[in-house]
Image 1: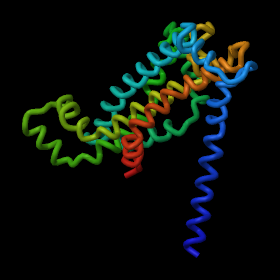
Image 2 (image 1 turned 90 degrees about the vertical axis):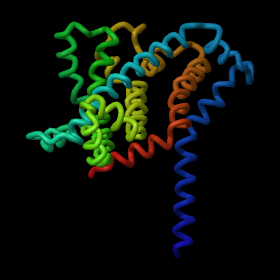
Image 3 (image 1 turned 180 degrees about the vertical axis):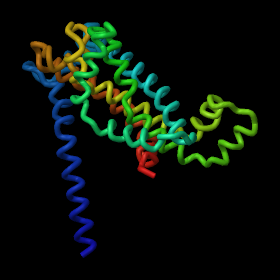
Image 4 (image 1 turned 180 degrees about the horizontal axis):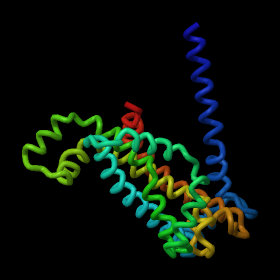
Length: 257
């Protein structure tokens, strides 16, 4: 009986992988096929011949790196405060943080639009970067990660004369590498895949990140569009291939304690 259940589970897992990979496999192989047959001309056009596609790619990359860096700073400071400092209302604030974490992005579009309009930041990349820096997921992950650090280690650092920032930089961050990497990866990928925010906050199509531009301005040659899809997938594949262990460990440490 157990053997049958194992076979069924394995078969279901294989089917799930095939169904999940099918669109990516189709896009990859279809990107080599043109009306003239199988060729690499479209890859040459995207990666070498024209700077248009790569320029938009690198602009989107810079925006996502800024989001990841900003969110890491905010998440480290907030996470350490929630994890290692006892103050009135801490648990209530953390509970509210978890509630905000599960709200869909569509709920905050209108309030963010009003604030960005008041600050005069609409139609700029700051309209995409600043709200994304304060997404609560990173703070939640690092709070749980910092809680795994024994209080005795922090107390020893305080006895050695370490202030708050030195405790964070010299003790907490080196002992929470998985949580830090997980926060960086998820914040980068969240920015890389954003769709609603550019449409709501930007009017100029030239400012759209590549995730939105592909859908709203399909080129005449569909093969070029498929090659651009492959280009968009590359950062996510690279990050998961090199940091999958840290990603899994960071998510595991983020379980509610």
